[in-house]
Image (cartoon, rainbow, N blue to C red; front, side):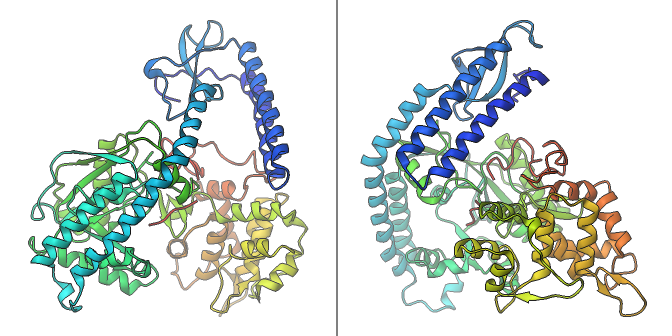
Amino acid sequence: MCGRCQDIWNPNFCKDLVEVVDILETTECISEETKAGDQKLTVEKVFRGLSLLEAKLKSVFAKHGLEKMAPIGDKYDPQEHELICHVPAGVGAQPGTVALVGQDGYKLHGRTIRLAQFCLLGVLLAPIRVLLAFIILFLLWPFAWLQVAGLTEEQLQEPITGWRKTVCHNGVLGLSRLLFFLLGFLRIRVRGQRASRLQAPVLVAAPHSTFFDPIVLLPCDLPKVVSRAENLSVPVIGALLRFNQAILVSRSDPASRRRVVEEVRRRATSGGKWPQVLFFPEGTCSNKKALLKFKPGAFIAGVPVQPVLIRYPNSLDTTSWAWRGPGVLKVLWLTASQPCSIVDVEFLPVYQPSPEESRDPTLYANNVQRVMAQALGIPATECEFVGSLPVIVVGRLKVALEPQLWALGKVLRKAGLSPGCVDTGAEPGRSRMISQEEFARQLQLLDPQTVAGAFSYFQQDANGLVDFRDVALALAALDGGRSLEDLTHLAFELFAEEQAEGPGRLLYQDGFSTILHLLLGSPRPAAKTLHAELCQAGPSHGLSLGQFQNFSLHDPLYGKLFSTYLRPPHSPRGTSQVPDASSPCSPNALANGTMEAPKQKGD
């Protein structure tokens, strides 16, 4: 709720709104169940549901004295689709107070106009724009090839100069601006002054929200970038990366990352010999509502950096390409369907690191993140992506914003499987590797697509096999009939090992990290570090059952974390266990809606 709004919620009002939500869920289910069948029948059922929803909303508003009104002036933000109402006297708020009620379900007239615009321009304008943009993209290839043609690898380790730099650089710069112009970005508004390469060898741009963000390279005069090594094999894109003399990193190769760090430091400390290097320090796309945690790569050299802000001040946000958001084609089509798109690029003053920041890249990154977040007017968060999962920091752990375990539960429920009815038969303390075929037989799954999807949630070895103990623990966690004590006891029994000396069984680093990865989505390195701290005698020792349950059930911080994540959505006992969104352990506890709409999109 915004600062100008006052809370009018009361138990009776919320109770009545529950019925509205039930209608909405029923409509959603109708759409899911019939989308593969008669499309005409689907549309008819959904519209009947929406009509019932509108009637129910009107009755709830009338019952509680809420008068629907048209939005006036700046009290209505079309980007947020908020419904603004006047609150008469006697309903718990001051007369005439503006209150946020919910999603805008009544602005049908405005939506109809926008829908007509999208349909018309999407059919007539978008295909032409995209086709012309692809033609320009392929015209970039000769200029990119010409700049590096005939040069050896040793020569490419130094900045390109002479006619190659003049002709090819200006050709790529001009064609790139034409490409974005054809896609609808008619205006690039620049604020502030770009620093010279001597003043700021490194540029850091944020928020990174879309694949259109490379447009920021144009007002920065095509600085060098950091990209995945795999992109070299992509047609045209690979040629442009060679033209750019990009710093390439393989995310799966630690040695490659070390070489990248050394190369960034070499270029940044070259005394202006190399052009500036531009980073997107978030490392992936977000929804622009907050800044993800900055990765330290851009700050390792300890040199001054210039923050660059990217904004898309358009009436509709068609550019965002974030986790669980629209796909590439939809974002491209929606943006190309707009008559005009605008991007603002703002250069902030150069950030001069302190001696402490120069020695500590993480501290440096965090402080620059806060400066940029303050300039943008959005929160700076600890949320980041590890692989394909967004994670947040809770204590010493990084935990998934939405664990893969929950997604696995959705897949199994869609297949009609009840996890509690599967007899896993996993042998405690001993691994049993199974193939995808055996996995399907054990879970009695018949659909090949469902089998492949469910099997992919578990870590596979070099032979494509998974440990059946992982499967057994996941199914037990998805069974809402088990208590937290039973689940943690089962987890210990499955992964604890016999002591080398002495009786009893202990939970060592590998088993502990596997449990936390399965249940919380925590990266294994972070879990191993926490295990070493919990084992006072050292990481070579393990945790007893009592120590593990004390950590997972009774620790003030981690106990709350387990109680949240072991009661996934749709779990029979889950609704009362999940904490409020304001809780620091809640999957949605990110300031001001950090990750608003949980599909991850990487660079």
